[in-house]
Length: 62
Image 1 (tube, one colour):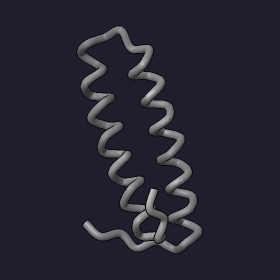
Image 2: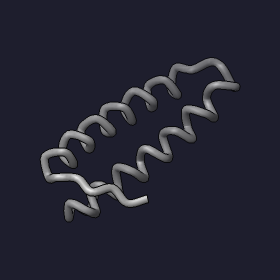
Image 3: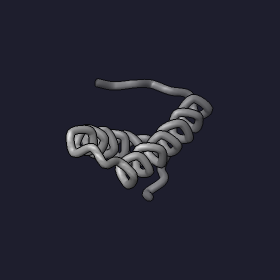
């Protein structure tokens, strides 16, 4: 899937994804449910890949 964004939209989306990844990391760290943790970890991996793609598209290699 291809998504075209303005620079401002990409900046906002990057910020939102960063915050959500932080929330998921915290939830995984404190989750005692073994059923929930794998789902959160999968979401975290997907969001981190989205973040990397956003940064690549913006020319930021982090």
